[in-house]
Length: 74
Image 1 (cartoon, one colour):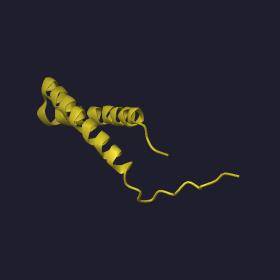
Image 2 (tube, rainbow, N blue to C red):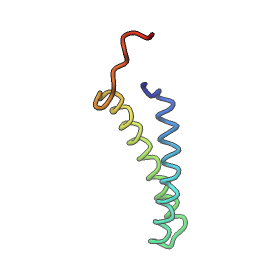
Image 3 (cartoon, helix red, strand yellow):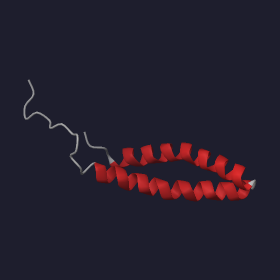
Image 4 (cartoon, one colour):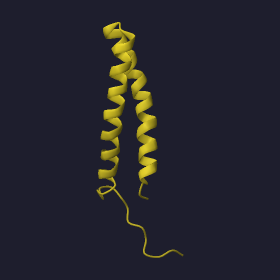
């Protein structure tokens, strides 16, 4: 089964929302500055959504570990 572009984007976005919260909390703890932590979290999210999307689309082109569909169905 091949992932659709839409599904890859939704997966990347939902995963990064969780990651954004983690990044924001770590940045806030380290800097003590709420606004700076929010900016770091936002930038991290945008960059990593793009990276994840590209990664997903690339892996859809790599056959490693995939099983071939049978040529017929009974």
